[in-house]
Structure formats: C-alpha cells, structure tokens
Length: 357
Image (cartoon, rainbow, N blue to C red; front, side, top):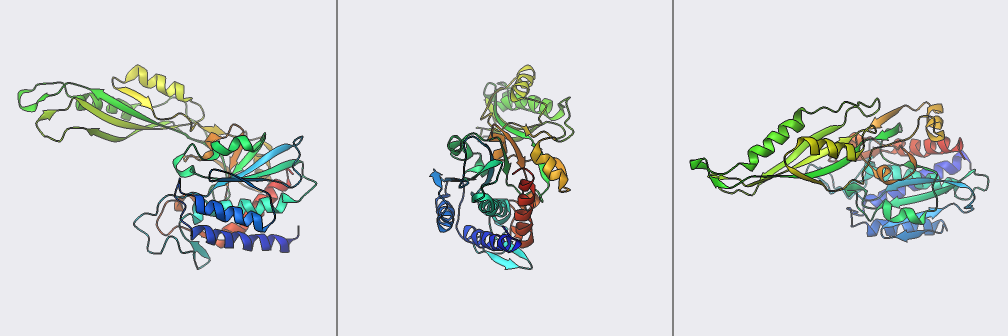
C-alpha cells in the first residue's frame, strides 16, 4: 500500500474519531458507538461480528494454521467532569488538536488501530493473522468487555493494546485489587466510656497499612502499594461509640507479587475482616526479547512500566500497551489529541508490524 493510501487511512481515521466523539459511549452504554464502528466496517466491505458491545474482525485471508496478533482498544469513555469549557460531545479542531470526550482515551488509539487493520486486511503475504477487536466496559473493568469477546477471536499469540502512551512501549503494568475491610467493635455511650470502638481498631490496621513496605521492588514498576482510600461508620450521632467501621484498600501490585501473596500478608497482620472485590486485574509484563518489543526498540522506542491498568490485564497472552496520545490527558477536562499524533500512531503501528508480518 502506497504512502498516498496511508494518508487516506489517516483521513478516514480522523473522520471516524469525530463521529465517535459526537456519540456518548459511557461504560455499559456503548451501543451507539458500536453501531458506528459496525457501519465503518460495512462501508469497507469487511465482515465483522458483534458480541454485546464488542466488535471484532479478522483479516481477509485468515488462516487457522498461522499465529494471530490482536489489535485492541476500547470505545467506552468515562463521564465528563465539571471542568469542561467546551462541549465534550462536539468534535472541535483547534491549533492542530481534536477536542472531545474520549479523543485521547482511547479514541485516537482505537481509530489508529482500525486504520492499521485496514492496511493489512487484504494482504496475502503476512506471517500472522491480524485480528481486530474494539472492546466495551474497559473504563470500569466490566465483565462484558474484552473477556466476553476473547473466546470468539481464535487462538491469539500476542497483541497490541491501544492506550495513550506517547507511542512509547508500556511493557509492564501494575495489577489492581480493591479490598473491602470491616473492623468490628461494640456500641456504647461515649460519655461513659462504654463499648469497644471499631473506629480505633480500624485506625490501628490503617496505621499498619500506611507504614508497611513490600520488600521486592520492580525495576519497571517500582514498589507494590497499599493505600486506604475510604473509611466510614454507620454512626450519625456524636455520642455513640461505633460498633463497626468499614474501610477500603486500593492495592497496586508489581509483577513480582501475586494477589495471594498480598492477601496472605494482610491476613497475618490485620485484625479487621477483609474480602477482595475481584482478583481479575493482575499485573502483567511482556518479555523484553519478545518480537513486538524488539521491533519497537528497532524503531527507537523506549519502554517503561505503566502505573495504570487496562484490558491488557485480562488477556492470557503477551501484549504490548502502546498508542498515540498522552495518559496525562485522560479523564481531564477539555480532553484532546493532536491530529499529528493519530497520523504518527498509524505510521508507527504499521512500521512496527511490518517487522513481524
């Protein structure tokens, strides 16, 4: 495909992103953007399938005897915050920037990967199959997102997960576990020093959490971290000693620890009862000698460990998180992506995959 054809793909990608921005697609409410993506594939005469609000397609000459590489990003967004000074659903181009909710996270990545998929769709000479999936519910780690569609994609050898990384390579990602804790005490009247304060028991555990340090430090992801982010009692009166106190621990784990190791550490040291909400979002990493990473290094790309989680955590194969845009802009007011970032994203994905395919 010629440079002129790549320019056409770049233009189509930007126009598609404008349509997606103009269409609200909050997590679990992605039906309308799913329809837009389906219509885009129909317009290019590309067969596709839909599972919930997830859409997937395979290259024209898909061969079950070949290895497959997955190109994935999500089309759901968070809700706009109150700081917006422009309409989050009006795609506005100004000073080379495309403004709008989801433009950076992760619309730019999504349309860049769609364009990349189109580039390879009709090729007969690829060493890998190329499979594309636009997933839902990524922003809430929902069960009806990428996990729902993975069984339909065939066996996947490796993948690229499109998230805004300034087109550098996120080769590792912290895992996330949220733990609900309950300290139990005994109610009483505060004036008579009755009861047994569940709040004080919770504070004792919270102080231990605050001061605890994990021994194993990752060169890519740094320390694993425990952070108490919520605390509450049912008390509405100042003169009642609380019988119960609830608090929440946000756990960010590097690739050197399993969730079971974290839970065992807490079991040995906390007096409060606790239960993890989920253990799905595990820490992940891709080997630095993996062909995808080596291809990126050959292009002069640097690699790092990402503190944020993505659908990468839910994929049982090696994945590289990489895409146009800047994570620092995600979930911010007046979100934007540079048009040149999208163009560079498409060119970079193609240059990267050319070394494998």
